[in-house]
Amino acid sequence: MRPKSAIVAGFDRAFSSIFDANITTLLVAFILFAIGTGPIKGFAITLAIGIVSSLFTAILVTRALVQIAYGKRKSIKSLSIG
Image (cartoon, rainbow, N blue to C red):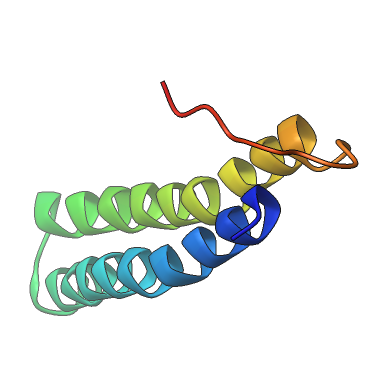
């Protein structure tokens, strides 16, 4: 498998895990907001903002950085992980 296709396949496989974990936590934040009062609602809002920004960073920003680093190279023969 070529390194570029390995990078794409890795991101595609990781997407479902990242999305599932963050959506589950976001659901908990909505439940906390719905049944909580005062500081609990504030915590739920802060948690939701953190989860959304984490999801954005994990999916879009990381993928963009990898594309910047390896996307412009015409033919990568090997990919160093260490």
